[in-house]
Amino acid sequence: MNAGMAMSSRSPKVHTRRFKSYTRKDLDRLPQLRRLGPAERTAIKALSWVFPFRTNNYVLEELIDWEHLREDPLFQLTFPQPGMLEDADRELMVRLVEAGADDTSLLQAARSIQARLNPHPAGQMELNVPTVGGRAIPGLQHKYRETVLFFPSQGQTCHTYCTYCFRWAQFVGIDELKFASREASTLARYVGEHEEVHDVLITGGDPLVMRTSVLERYVEPLLAIEHLACIRIGTKAPAFWPHRFLTDRDADDLMRLFDRVRRAGKHLALMAHYTHPRELSTPAAQAALRRVLSTGAAVRCQAPLVRHVNDSAGIWEELWRMEVRLGAVPYYMFVERNTGPKHYFEVPLARAWEIFQKAYPRVSGLARTVRGPSMSATPGKVVIDGVTECAGEKVFVLRFIQAREPSWVGRPFFARYDEKAVWLDDLTPTFGEQEFFFEPMMRRIRDNAVLPAWGGRDERRKTPQLFGHVEWE
Image (cartoon, helix red, strand yellow):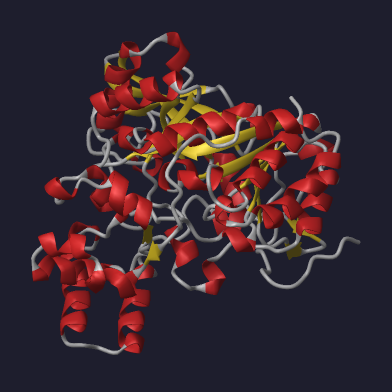
């Protein structure tokens, strides 16, 4: 495919829409919210001090069913809900809002609550940040041998925030909780010096909130790295702002960039977050997906299983069918992470497996590329393969599909069946074992001991010093 071919698939006749965002300060002016009572509107405003809130005109006008507001999954997905805070914390924030407290008092109360919500789960701050010369490299994570995550500072927001987002701490204005970098040369140099890295995932936030010219500055240096095979872009834009690919001023430039990555011999994968079939139902969403695919990029689809939004087998069956019909690849069903308002959105592991198991046989083999339910836990991605009885004991059958230690990948293990467990940390070993097989190595990792020999060398990790520009020795 050449650049001319990419441009020949210019966006179809889709209504041109100018992006308009809405944040906390706009809540009182949204006419749609007048369908709610004053107490409900106050609760939304109170929670927006604790959790990031941002939406846009496309989501408001085309995705949310305002006639059935309280039960609507897209409203649950994009507007803070009262149940997202424990009663005492919610009542405190509501009292402050109703009393007309100043911003300083509201922010102080919110910060106290946020600190108790496990803002960076799975060892992201302590274990995933690579170091060079004893200093952490800002904006990079290197948890798995083959893959580096990069957080461009200009992409640390989204067209609309998801209420369940496990990266909510990126967006609440606490600098020390952010992963972010403006150093395109640092990314390229780190990847260039680590031949075990085959994939770079540009993530956020959402990298596609950036102008194409800014994204290009990060992507172009990667194209010359011979051992790099794939560039991924994690994004919710196809669902929440499809006009990014269609009628935005630099939409054509973005398609040319995608085409250029492919012509450089790299695989380009858009890691698209579709949480509910409605996000794929509009003409703009479908046109955006077709246009991305016309560049030769792949679109792989992932989402967490979220209570109040998509916690039924029928929803997942419909979602996977739509993705395949439109040319995308079902990739992951995730378990909602143990952070933020997890008590409101989490689904017990037993129920998650039941939903997956009911939906999976109902779709064709083309949709059975999906993996799940998968927990992105501290040791790695652990998938629930099933529930069975072994040696007279009911157990979960688990397996690593990605891991800090590559030799763990594919290795099955067992945990006692627990209908209330919602995360890996809630599970206990079976058959008289005192700990899971991976726990001794995880203790070494947490104690800053020698990590697996990636690329034929040991790497020692000290507590990151998240400051300054990184210089190589």
